[in-house]
Amino acid sequence: MTTQFEFRLIGASAPDGELEAEQLLAIVTSLKEIATKIGRVETDAEPVGRAPKRTQRVAKLTIGLAPGSTSVLARRTGAGDALEFDLADEQAFDEKFAALVESIALDQRPSWVGDSLSLAAADLTAALQQAAPEVEFKVAGKAHRRFKTEETHRETWRVDPTSSPDFITVAGRLYAVNLNTHRLQVQDDVGHQVALPKVSNDAEVSRLIGSYVTVTGAPERDARGRLTHIHDAAVIAAPDPLNGSVVPAAVSLDEILASAPGVEPGGIEGLTDAEFDSFFEAMGL
Image (cartoon, rainbow, N blue to C red; front, side):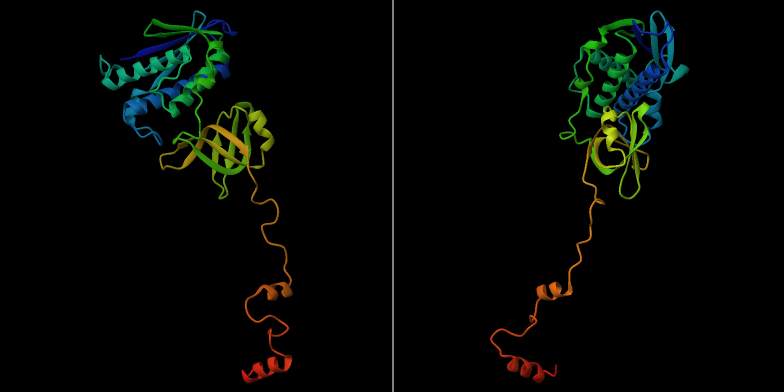
């Protein structure tokens, strides 16, 4: 069966039934990310890599717009018309999805929300703030919460990378892909490129473009386990291994001989020159 989640955007700047493309894209992207992460949990899927078909079925959303202010409609389609009832994992998905949005409205992070899902919730919080000053959230036509977006905070969902086992740190050279979409990229020392989507302070970080940096954030890997993205990335400057000389300055032969083990040039302490010469003559040298 289909469950519809409705976000009525009250006071949005666009006419009823319309929404600026960038705002709609931000909402849809964050909703898809939340749905996928909840779907993985409810279907016991691996947290990284390509989502299995069961997860894709549970977390599949279709998006629509409707007038009456402007409403973003997210429908969980599930198994479609094949069944006239929701499966257990679909019911659990609906409950978790609704609970997460209500937590955003209350500006409280529940204990059951892990770091990965928290990052997606932060993105939805920011997207709703950009879209409208007030939001009414409905599930299956029933109003659940109405809240002012200025009273919600992305920081509520921020994750401490130093205490999260889900975070990694990568070193490499920083490149810009598109500052308008907050997308950067880091390339490690062997040429592997990793995308850094939606870097929050990219305007500040942009001064580091072309420089060596360390990046800490939540990793995303492909089906083969290769690192492809780092989400909610914190980017800081790092010493460039290619700056300065990595080869020691030239050393004279005399210095090398003076520091080498063995007989020092100029004789052996306690022997006269004649005794020194006789010693080496006896050795055939």
